Image (tube, rainbow, N blue to C red; front, side):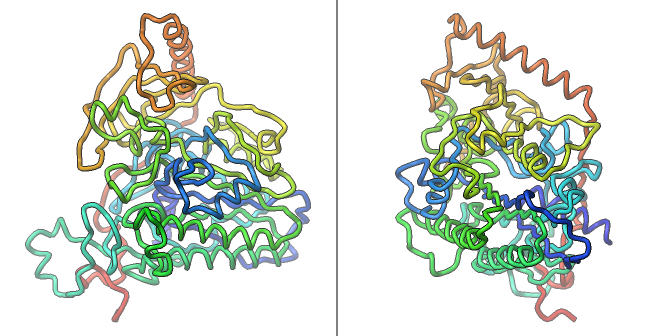
Length: 511
């Protein structure tokens, strides 16, 4: 049973939910950590680049994030490592692309496993450096084990198509007609115990925030360096929030939910700012772009419209390798260390979080494997404009083989060997198309990815030769690396259920 729950929590780290550690600090075991910073990673779900007011003037719902950007470093060209949840989060945890760590597409409610156990996570390394960790390796867990749409709730909020509430009838007769469509209620876990099923989504962000603040306070009292990972359900559908945020935005339910997310981050920053030692680095980013299929319940890509794709049909956001799918808002905040009101146009990625935090903690990258991130400490401190020479955007849900590196960003150029496959609002789906030679866009003068370069143009030819070289190099490097293979098998018996005799599993009236 312990192994099963470990696999559940590993899977949870890659889909959604919140993880934090609340250890019993032993002062005799705590080393002095002067110079060792604390780390807080906030990873919003399905948020768009244009959902941050500091990025996009049409957004008015993020005053706390905008202030965080004004007091810190705002990234303009920052990318998720993939355009869907599981591979994006696996890469953040390991600093490795999915073809290396084995996680190439999403896990599900019935998934038997998660991140391969032989992969080394950021939390593993920091725990060895005497950090109390808030990820894999944690001593305390509080959160939902997968995305908030992977199970019914009594008050499901806003989604397309609308989600019905959980049935309350405990009689199983209705399941005998078509048992495959039975919806199990979304559970809330504390350690290995289900404490609520179905979870109350309208209170979830508030409960998460309280746990975050409690952890920070306890860690501060102990003088122990900490690593905290906060992965709110916002802005994933179904959109649900506390009633105090209802009708506070002209953008409707999406804007109301965005205000709640921003409010929660503001409360966390207040707690961070209460520590006058200024020893906490807070890093905010998104796990991928907005889910266009959800229409008005989806976020804003800002100027990254992917017009070539939308003209073909389908989406150019989440589940695609167009800019709207993986270019996310990102801010680094560290008072007294990171210059205020700074902006970076460097080409960077969530892969870099792994490779940056470990040296800052005085630790070393694990041996016997290769990494795809950069140590961007000097970028954070305003001492460098370093960036990736190339970024590789894997197919993680739209078309082609999962994880394949069929889209390459090289400086200002973006090359597509494969396009199409994701649904747009109202259900239209662009055709999957192979491109040989690839489509190449110059993002400096074509932010919306509307018109590819003419293959007969000398600019295209020069860019294509460089793209071909870097693609061959990365594929050769991966083929000789110590790679992992994730278990994507399914078993309905692994679904978490506190009362199996109830139609949807309810924690109330458990005998």
